[in-house]
Length: 190
Image (cartoon, rainbow, N blue to C red):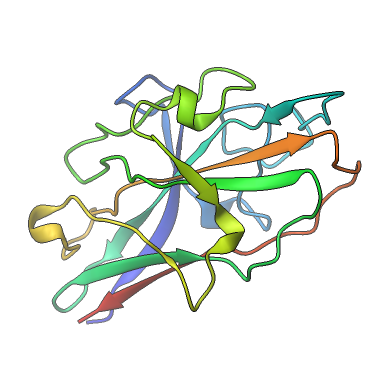
């Protein structure tokens, strides 16, 4: 049987206990909005503001794959990438180099994004380094991870670990509503 998976976003709540787990397919398009609030809502509230100096940070987003219908055997080899584009001067989207634990039995890697203007490397206990998301493309994707038994997904409700992403904004940015960008999450299924 062919697997069916969704991309989920965890928000709110407390560390190790998200307040909401949202299937982002129901949100858009766009399906994910970087803003100054830790919620899945796609609206004009809590927009990012260009700083006079320094850097402003969106609340980080913690996304993961969720298995809706089990594969015949397993899902593994999770990769994340973009088209390599980006939004131009003063706007960077960073992705954590680490993959905090998320699985069908644990939200141990969930860290609530509870402060405006907190950079994820400084504020997320499980993220030590980050990389510009738009450096990852189909030819050079970011490899994710799975913390389910056997490091595979093979049952309904199983998940990948978190990918943690955050928008960084400097005064080099121009005011605008930005065009949507696409993040692709790919996996092997056997």
